[in-house]
Picture (cartoon, rainbow, N blue to C red):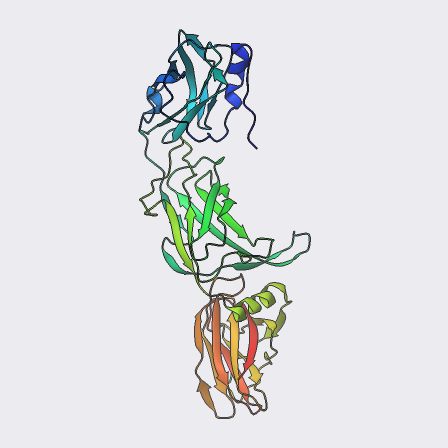
Length: 408
């Protein structure tokens, strides 16, 4: 909330207020005052100066058009500018600079100043500092710049929530070339597909001594537009312009990696079946299964793994680490059988009625939750057929999968 102007009756009281004045600057005043009205006639640095090196700026001075009431007025600097106690010399007010940010726009606003006849004097000095240090660069991002198929959310089980359970979020991380100022951690997310969704300011968490920023996007609580963590099939930008390097406060190099100072990406459609399987992967207790090996079907016996919505933890026997489980098809419905796997491994299916292999499609899963990395699927024909599921070889002896059965 904006504070009221501080008016002092003695100069020292006015000066003590300077270090606390860091609010956003007001709109600039009329640069062409009325004839005879008191005004600021000269400043150092000059208004509109660009790329002044902070080391060359040791003080700020303002010269007024006539005698001033030196007992009134407060200098209000922007947050990147800190001033010491100012002094008057004739019609000129000078304040030493005790801290000034590199590569930043600065403002200094007069509040409550009056000339010797009691007439107000208004002015805002604006200038920009440059830098002689390399700017930070984004070197990596978990969402690539320009990505076109970003899944809108992730599902996770929150054990520490007031109501433990499965919740949506979207996390992304950014790596930087140098340590960053950890007090600056806010970025702005904008949806450019749906203008009714207001921009969101997200505060990240710095890790690795300021070289990595982790951003977590929880789902909004109002349930209105933007109710998902990210909207599907939407174009987004993540504005990183508020981030600064730790050494001198440099801005990001807007061209390297990002191209325009913002991370641009587009989200994909959501997959309801995959998200449903994730709820089982995150919440269900796993049923332990010992797969069989030895003779190829149909001569061997294989334990059943054919209950839909179930989470199975399968142990593969033998040094080859491969084995079989089984599934019985429905008596009167063809099905699409889907196995949501927790790792990549070879999966096959054998039709025990027709004595032949069935084509199985194995592909990487969208990154929606832990516990599901790949999806295997095949068509099962009705008639209570025995299907032998073949797994491996695989580097690990134990793996898990969620079974889903979809009738045609």
